[in-house]
Length: 160
Image (cartoon, rainbow, N blue to C red; front, side):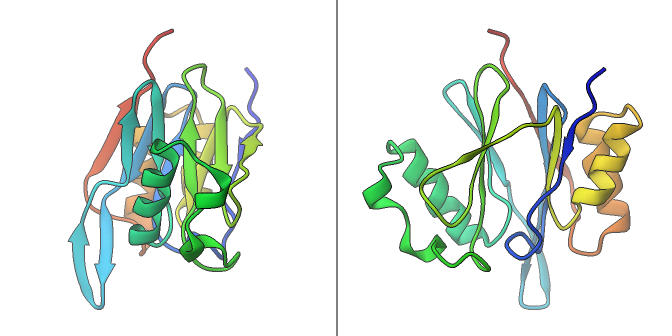
């Protein structure tokens, strides 16, 4: 098996764990509001694509709406231009190719068969490298990383 792995850029995605194992995208649900733990969904399906938003949640939602509206470079959210702040947008295309948007309207392809993003990325990658699923990888990150937690959401990529 091809075990190319990819982790996240640390400065931008200080919370969250989102993992991709080649067929399933999974994410934790923890959201911190001051000192209060709350929960939300960080992944979604849009047509045949899967989207994930590690980082600042409100900016991530703005990024997802921008992408769903056609990803016009001139309309890229100004709130996400700072390379050290904001959110990333993970887009899994129907064929399984993964692209990541950061502080620019131009994505780069993540050339890896297993990927993890956010503060729980190292735990998630280690778990997937041992042969476990993205869902199990997020469960493990929730146990060991203080900025990950709650239930696990998962979406499976539809067969072509």
